[in-house]
Amino acid sequence: MKTRFFILIAGLIIATILLTGAFSAGFLAGRVTAPASSSVVSVQPEITADELTPLPPDYAGTPEEIETLFEPFWQAWQLVHENYVDQPLDDEALMRGSIQGMLDSIGDPHTSYMDPEQYETLNTRLTGEEEYEGIGAWVDISGDYLTIISPIPNTPAERAGLRTGDKIIAVDGENMTGVDGALVQKRVLGPAGTTIRLTILRENTEPFDVEIVRSKITIPSLTAEMLEEDIAYIRILDFSNKVDEELRKALRELLREKPVGLIIDLRGNGGGLLTSSIEVASEFISDGVIAYEEFGDGARRTFEARRGGLATKIPLVVLINEGSASASEIVAGAIQDHDRGVLVGAVSFGKGSVQISTPLMDNQGAVRITVARWLTPNGRTIHEIGLTPDVEVEISEEDFDANRDPQLDKAIEIILAK
Image (tube, rainbow, N blue to C red):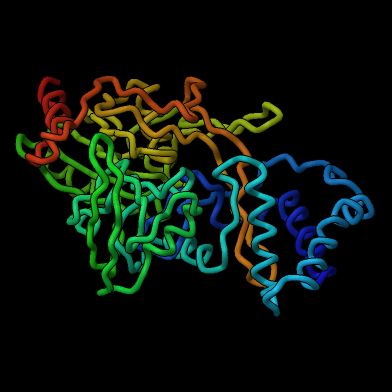
């Protein structure tokens, strides 16, 4: 077991160094969030790493130095196997826990371990084809409590009235204080037709319980429609690898109606594939930089607009809020820096780092590692800052209860004024 674990660690180091061609899905641009409607803890997507600068081959020390470094680990391994009261121990669980602990010690909530189930669901989710069983909400697992980023439209979470910022402090009456967000999310997931009771902590309210019946949920990449006053409206829900194909189809259909303007709604969109964000932004920006990746040594990788965008001239308003993160912020930031449209809503989440997801041998899941930060075309960093909209509009408690949407109303007003 010692030899196998050492090979696993060495393989992880090698896989991290030799990134070229290793990730067909590409770099992760999404946040550490996941649909509570699926069995995945992290929705972070990927993008090809063929331009990454390899680390020095001796950066982690020689094999002898590494073996010496790990001697206390093996001592602890032996002690727990010899002395722990309940035997036998689950060696696989101990190995996974060791990897998780190593990554947790870095102190970056976006660098983490995914078990096999979580990693499998991550990959299937990004195809836009899978059904998930759960409550139907994007969540943030990196805080003190599992936190709702946004309920997915037409799901049990939305019908139950869950909102952005809601914290799940108990599940079926069991206090979740101090429990890792990934473990809480596993508790929230479950078979369609089963009921779960969540205790919610919402700002300016006392904790309250919500009972939700889980269901099967298919997550669309977007929805599209014509609003009154001949305004086209597209809500992008997820930056999966099918979003650009679906977006181009929606744009063709809407543009045939000769709209006077277009509203792109990115509210509650927690991120997705970096490549997809570049494709989406290119539908609205004809040329120029969409985003930069900046690595630890200061080197930059430039992503420019791809030719052939279908909506590069039409008046444009983009809606964002505190649930708009990562890939959403890449699109919104590029549109803002290019003065291509008006951003309306609330300050976005502020997820400006890039992760790579690397599968581990023997189907033992994957590790997700932060490798870079991205910048807007004007070189702005939004990490832990967010994007400030050109026109800030808040949605009050009264607006929510009355089913009013002043942010959308303001976007329509701006389009008509143009």
